[in-house]
Length: 149
Ligand SMILES: C[S@@+](CC[C@H](N)C(=O)[O-])C[C@H]1O[C@@H](n2cnc3c(N)ncnc32)[C@H](O)[C@@H]1O
Figure 1 (cartoon, protein in one colour):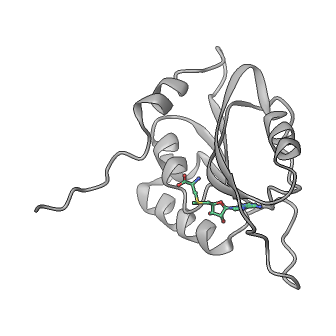
Figure 2 (cartoon, rainbow, N blue to C red):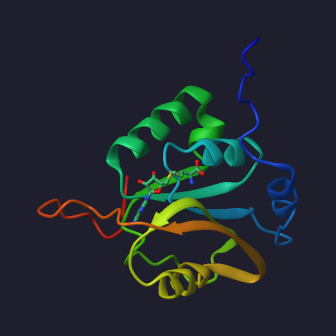
């Protein structure tokens, strides 16, 4: 059986979500738990300014390298932030869309959602797909509280 290439990172539902734009401004999305940046790259290639947050330096490095390979117009649209979603907070009301996809959360999920959703601009939207798990930064490896890379 021929192998199917995975070329669609963003589904129809999310494509609809990304029609949400504030007029007279550059569209902005917060990708919380961005991982290696598959969605971040897709979004940047479609004209969004992306703040991609993750606590994994390896994932952020991978995403940054791929963004650089995709070209300056994509790379320049993505701000990579190393931060723990257990405590990191976005700039208030700064984003048209806040995404948090397939992130395994520890701690108080309602508090985390409220905190991250504070980054949604008036009229903006958020999309969540998260499950509870025990993923936490390893002890004795402090995670920067939102250092931009
Ligand atoms: C399954 S990946 C999903 C990546 C991306 N959102 C996607 O849909 O392809 C989950 C990501 O969440 C990140 N993550 C989990 N808990 C986190 C936390 N407390 N702070 C920051 N990132 C976290 C992991 O490092 C991982 O990159």
